[in-house]
Length: 386
Image (cartoon, rainbow, N blue to C red; front, side, top):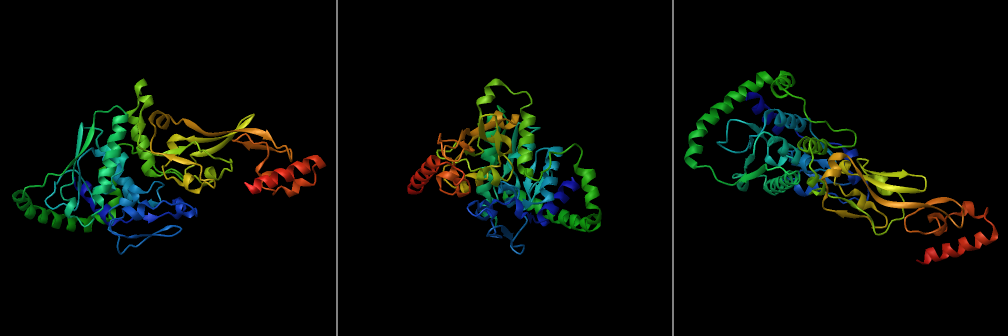
């Protein structure tokens, strides 16, 4: 169990790094500020990208949990997830005085994502998390994040047809029991501190021997965050033999919905950080498709839609996500522009391409015949008035 204690110490001391390229704030209209809202020590500042104030950061790992795109990167979080898969359930916060001596110690229960919680409950019927100390912890906002993550994890388990459940234990520990454990805990902390001095130089080797007994979950890629890959990995494992009744189940992850107004500009697909939105061409049409499992629930597509027509739902189909199926968001027939003769996508059935409609197709205007020139000018004028 020393390796698990050491892991908790490392997690507490290792602070995340910011990968600005993963953050959707690089898009001017993006509104995501989950890291800022949920950081319990106000260690994050937001501009076009997030910045971490290391003097305020406690290494709790909450930012890595709440960020949908993986902009907060910490190898320690991946080691924690692998340890949970290998060693199973018992999780407890390192900030609890007189806490249990067995199990995996984490810097804050707020670091645990839905995928980690589902991995922790894989070998048991009930997973209990001790949150009795949260009301007096300096990380005051952590409890709300724990509640939210546990609720979402239970919703996923329920959608998968699992009878497993995660509960939050608010029962305060008896003062007498805490006092009895205090001297023993102080002694163990001293021993651990002395052992750390010897072990720190070979920590990577020790972790390999102590924690990695089985193959861990998939790692993050250039577009998919580790948190999302882990959740999909756990869901696929639980849904190895899907039943017909699960195909209608939904999980509490948002996704873009078919827009009520679309000019098929493709900006949402170009900006999607995970490549979940793609434009596919067929013989007679173009389609905007959503790869359901790759969607990170970041809402960037809805934020930057120039027509404000792309809406966002609060759930998605479980079976489509696990099976890797796509959903057609917009279908646009190929139409020949009546003014310039070019093929264009027309999701609303219009017969004038956006270039001619906005009066910006001047390069092609002089190649048109007199009748087409007149029609293009007339329709462009109406487009401007609208």
